[in-house]
Amino acid sequence: MPQVMVVDDSRTQRAIISEYLSQLNCDIILCSSGDEALIKVSERIPDLIILDVEMPGLSGFDTCKAIRGFLQDTWVPIIYLTGRSDPEDIVEGLNVGGDTYISKPVHRDVLSAIAKAMLRLSAIQSELIKANRKLDEVAHFDVLTQIMNRRGYQNMLERYWSDHVRRKSQLTILLMDIDFFKKYNDNYGHIQGDQCLREVAQTLKKALKRPIDIVARYGGEEFVVILPDTNIEGAVNVAERLIEAMRTVNIPHEFSDCQPFVTLSVGLAQADLSNETSKQVLERADKSLYEAKEAGRNCVRH
Image (cartoon, rainbow, N blue to C red):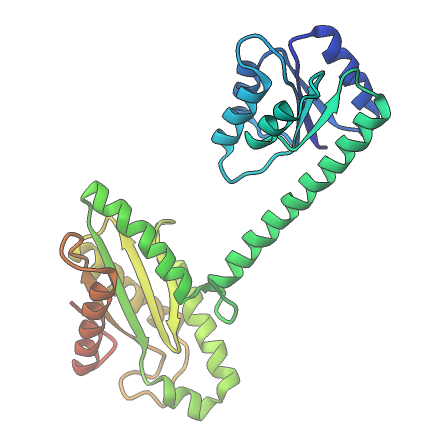
């Protein structure tokens, strides 16, 4: 049910507006001042605000300006109620963030029609926000493996990076590769190869114990893990647990040159947050991954 906030210092006027809005099937919140409205908006953002212009203390214009400043990019339609008709007043009110005017005395049908129109716009915006969030999730999600993709990993790493710089905490990256995956694909087929990628991704996801640890498909048969608040020793323990998880899940790979099941080579690097970029720490993890492959695969190096 949409929520409509009515802000007016007159109890009579609030009662009249509430009665006019009763046919809209909405939840009505009444405020007697601009200060009270600001408190209510901070607790829950309404779908529509109907705001008297002339009030003691914070005027309608001041209240509107304060609400817009608080909400920033979140748009809520604001209707002014006013007896003013000077063009200068109308321009001022619109410039500080109002959307339209209704003249006093308020006509029931006019208020109802404009309120319905504004609520439609508010509903459309809500749907657009939901759609954009969904698109953002899809853009950061790997459909095949059902985990985060490379773009999602980079987005999360940027967030973690700035947070760890601020807190002067430790952050470690694991980069891993499925051993002899080309031979797996060549001999079992690409459909089975895709299934292998899905199983590996879900195995890694389950093996990570903390919700803050992030696993993503970096590309092809490569996966990356972000370990916040983790030093080298802790990261090595996690990497060894991931390798053991692959042993336990035991995906057959009779064409592997190291084990009869699918294995991982893991390279890791702890970020030097003050002296390198996120790209550089990944490059160091990649060098460690190469060393793991040179050491016979199915192992971790740093």
